[in-house]
Amino acid sequence: MEAVEGNQFVFIEFYADWCSPCKLMNSVLKKVESTFGDRIRVIKADVEKSPVMREKYNIEGLPTSMLFYNGECIWRRSGALPESYVIAELDAKLSVQI
Image (cartoon, rainbow, N blue to C red):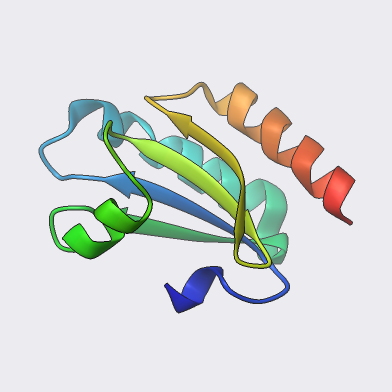
């Protein structure tokens, strides 16, 4: 996936429309966007429409959240996550990488 390459942070949320816990992550993604602005690019990836991505990143459970920097996954979690947890984790990762 070209979107994860380059000198930037990319947060990808792997989801499916039928996945109820995935829907809970929508507000978390909005908070990530509003908190970090252009410091993190946020992408939602529907695994049903892109089985190649599902296989490439070994997505077994949904939702799965991944943070990439320079094309490398530096953080990964599965399941619906609390907003405060995600913000704190991403903030820590951005602080270390900068």
